[in-house]
Image 1 (cartoon, rainbow, N blue to C red):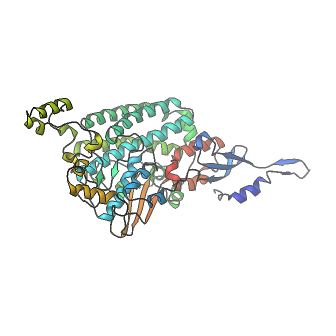
Image 2 (cartoon, rainbow, N blue to C red):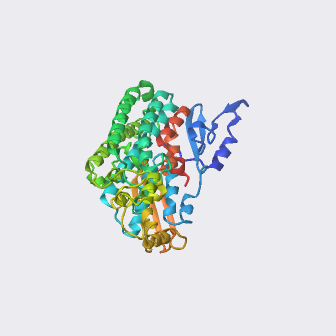
Image 3 (tube, one colour):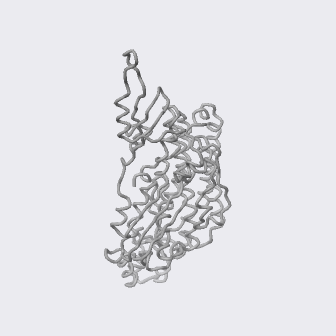
Length: 466
């Protein structure tokens, strides 16, 4: 039976009795206490594990978190609803788009807003791309910590293909701030479908190579199988979700249990493990990468048509030529019909494709910049939504929205008092529950097993220390 977690006071008292006297007055060695972290490469600098050892066997562990706390929830309550979007990027910063989606959907639920169908497909597509990048990072880094450096390089290469897609759509690789309350900031660029399909094929090829390097590798199996085990009952008691829960055989996935966006139209399976050990968690994540690839391909096939960047007609006209034509009063018709390239700041969301990626609800979504500069109504609407004391003002109430993050159920609970600022924002990050149970998963294993077990948890600091 697993031992009860040791409190810090109890650990200190035990530490003072590490060495005692035997019956004949000789020194008798009992247990050893070892600090792993926070200054440890595998602890990411933000987790401290004090392990109690008998030789190299872990008898107990005290897991201390909080080294990266940055007051995410209180920061969201200081500004307006839209100002919290960049904060959500910094939760699970490996798959930030999923964070954007969860928070925006919670506020949309307060408003009673439904985003357009094309927008929902885009969010589903981008969420699955983010899920793959997260799993690639987790598996690659965990393999590297066990000495499989080649696998790490391969998976980071695969992640680069997907980060290129993310950057093309959002303009950033990591802190994307792509989601909006009522939509997204821009549509998919021209040629994205072909680039996405090519990237998915490259990822599949690399995943196949990594399967050959790891899945039946005797060293890898010996280091992972029957290590870090947790039972389904204990996992449910700790409120596990995501791959950690599914590795124990419990079939729970928010995308299936409480479908959102267009997941109810997607054909995919939920991979399950049987033993709840590190090896099963590896297998579940590897299979989830393939299932996410399937969802992405279905989104590309089913996404409804709509204007995109490629639908802009006409050719750009040079400024000098425009001035010359205007000076001589020639070809005014050409000046009206030909579109001119202007700065991205002035282009804004582009009215011609704005309707298909954002709601028309003026209470929530910012109007396109070109309209703000052209008519007083849009200027007033923009002013009301961004100025302090005005802003987005949903009716009084509360809403909870859960999405399936890469690590499990990511939930946002938002309370509105009718003002332009959230009265309360609460984030349910999946990592916290895993760290609460980590001491049970370590007991009985060797000290060398602490690193792969901690890696299989896929703890993300921003998501853990909110």
